[in-house]
Length: 137
Image 1: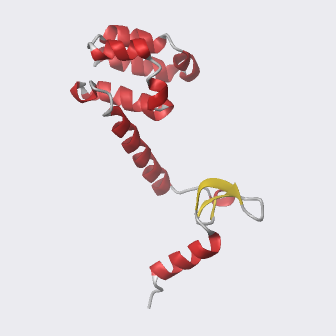
Image 2: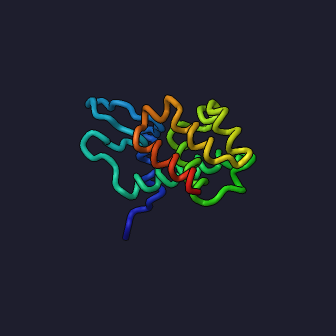
Image 3: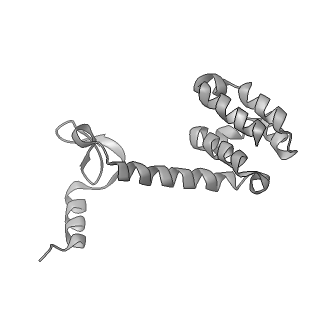
């Protein structure tokens, strides 16, 4: 007979605690969640995929706050979700000329404004690829 999974989850959570942010355990090992050792074990591809899905869902949800987002082509939606994933919606709001161009569907100017930014210098090729995608639609 298999053990009761809910009981072991509750027991381990009570003993280990549950933390959303990495911390050093009593042995100095980087740990997260309910005693998950990142130093020696890292995380599985399944966990990476789950985190990615949640992060993309959050970025896309933020993009829906932009009044023009729903009317964009799928390619331009990809660009905005990628940017919000990378820098967050609050920083995207700082791209005033870019957002103004997006609002009026001036994708040439939007693409140029993407490249004329500190962000573009920081992320290099990523910015160029996204600007090209914005331009091509």
